[in-house]
Image 1 (tube, one colour):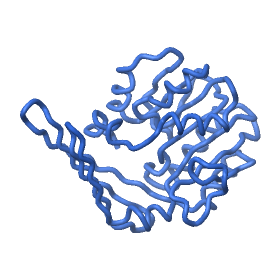
Image 2 (image 1 turned 90 degrees about the vertical axis):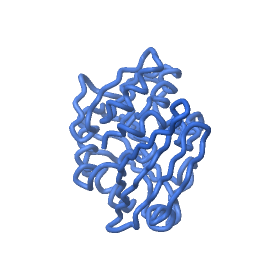
Image 3 (image 1 turned 90 degrees about the horizontal axis):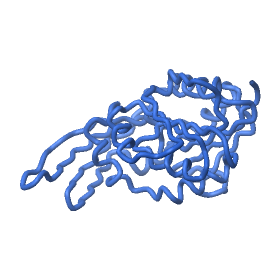
Length: 239
């Protein structure tokens, strides 16, 4: 999953209030320290947290997304092109975030378990892990089989979702971008897999995390059966 075509348009097509998301995640994190931003994308949140004094390691598997990120220089952000299931850092971290359903894009539960194990390996005892996932409810009730259209001044995007099977949705994004008087067509194929909240909680425990809490998106209320997105927080228990 390279985001080779989507990277250039990602920030304009992503409907997200990054200031709100960043402020929300700050509630769970230590005030300072080394923060790993996994699946950092174009680096907006990495730069947000650097602005609050964190030393940020921003990792993503897509060189195209990282190329977009590095167009906006920022002190205290180090970018790494890495697969989160094979995460390899130079030292330990005090906290880790993975936002906007990064874990859903992994190819299956073994990959999620591997990523959590790698995060745990490099996290200091007492460190905080916070991440969000799209839920089974969102996959089955809101995304499955539906098509969404984004019509911007210079980008037109049709996002089609397959019918959800085995909690997996395949997504086809067809984009038309204006280049002078010509429109260029490009296509990106993505997939997401959703998991039960109980499964993810168990995988966190298996990876050495405890005090697991699960919130409804951008609130401090417990996640429920109709939560579209759930936020997990967990503490690293052992060195």
